[in-house]
Length: 131
Figure: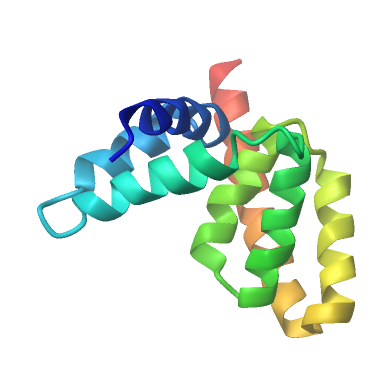
C-alpha cells in the first residue's frame, strides 16, 4: 500500500462523503474486507479523485450518471450526498438523472430519483435538527 496516496485519498473521501460515513466504513472492516477498504481509499480516492483533470463536482456528476446506469442504489445514495457536499445542486442532479433516463433507461433513472429524494429528505431533516 502507498501510504501517501492512502492518506490523500482518506482526506478526499472524508471531504466528499463525511467523517461519519468514512469512520463507519473503516470501523466495519475486518480481516476479510480491510484490504478492500485500503484499495478503495488509495486507488479510488487517492489515485483518481485527487487528479487535477476534473473538479470534484464534475466527478460527482459523472459518478451519479454511472451509478444510475449500473443501477447501484446503495452507492448512489452515498454519492448523492457526496455530490451535495461537493457543491452540486439538486437541480444539476435532476438533470443528470433526466439525461441518464435517455441513455440508461427510464427504470434506472426513476430509481435514482427515488433514492435522491430519500437522501434529500434525510439531509433536510438533519439540517432542521441542527438549526
